[in-house]
Image (cartoon, rainbow, N blue to C red; front, side):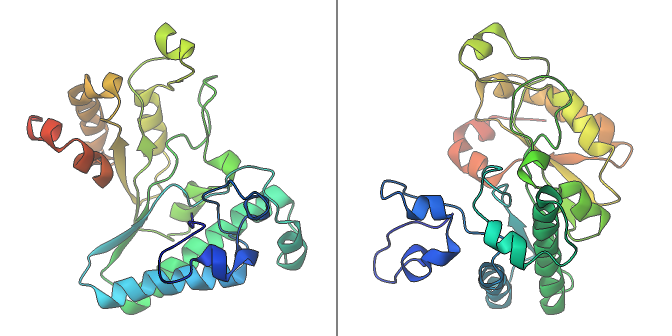
Amino acid sequence: MPQKKSVGVPSLWERHPEWIDARAVQNPNEPTAYLNPANPNVQAHLIKLITDFARRYDVDGIQLDDYLRYPTPSFPDSAEFRRYNPHQLPIDEWRRWTLTRFVEAVYDSLMQIKPYLKFGVTPVGVYRRLDNEPVMEGYALYQDSREWTRRKACDYLAPQIYFHIGKTTAEEAAARQFNPDFAALVADWSAHKNFRHLYVGIGIYKEGVKKEWRQNWRWCGKLGQKGSSSIHIVPQQVCLHLKTMRSFRP
């Protein structure tokens, strides 16, 4: 998400307001906003940034965050929908197709530069809801990560399954912090990885998860015996909780 103001070099918001979510452009109090993923100039700019990084630095992999999605179903992209919809898809399918095509373009561009480089994404931890917990699901925000793996457009997924085992507690419900079952989500992701690698993101910044991380680890390992999953802890969590991580033992 681009910042509205920058120091020195003008920000994307200042240089290309037409690339930005129009609702944020019209709201002077909005500090950040999504780029319009259906704008070809946005896609070209992002691919240029990513491939430039791959050329400049000796990296083994590049990973995109879960913000590779639409913020809400009401995103203002009607002009792009009319102009860049060659298959005349319904808008929901078109948005998923737009993001899938972008992921494919990133992957193909990186493979031309460094065929050995690994490219992955950390999607929303709930692809589609398995229960009635009112949490965000990636598919509803047009993040069709399973289509990315089916089309071999990435090397791995690292879904952000930042939940504990079991259902939402009464205390969590009172705070409106809902919890779909970690174990059920891991099993669901493992069953649909389409022969790509799967790395499970564990939210150790949450107290409920931190208390049971060994149990989470063992559950992933149980599924991993069938070649379905292994553990991934997102870098920002490791940095924020380095002292805690030092005390962890498998």
